[in-house]
Length: 165
Image (cartoon, rainbow, N blue to C red; front, side):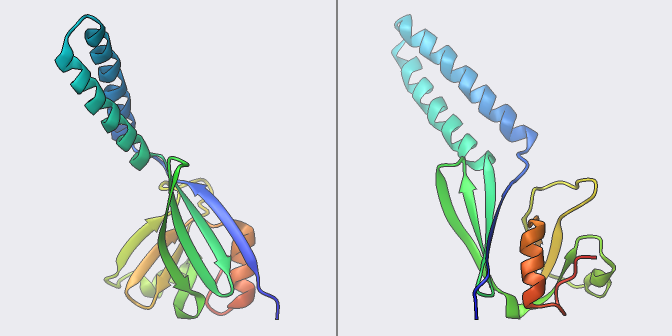
């Protein structure tokens, strides 16, 4: 039996407040460095603090998600600012109840459930919307933005649980 392997990388939408805060901290850093050149020593400490703050704001606002499907497992990694990678979760395809596009009629029976929602998608609705909702073991709802190839491979593995509408 051959194992199917597909990976997909999606960029999450960064919020406007994070972008504003990052630009603001960079501007304050440059101003404080200018004051340091004029001889104000306290401005150097403020410049370093604002520079470090701008680095961390950039790290947590520039996010990409990598989906990796291999041997009936979906692994989700979070890539922060293209420098740091963190494993978010691993989901077994056998435990998925249903996977369908976000506004699919296949999800009508699941809409009134009280579940924990985890959004690993692009973060906004496209026209047409290509995000998928995954109900996992009754307690979690995942929002994903997989590629068509990944959905096709997952559907071939588990055709009664995964719908492409």
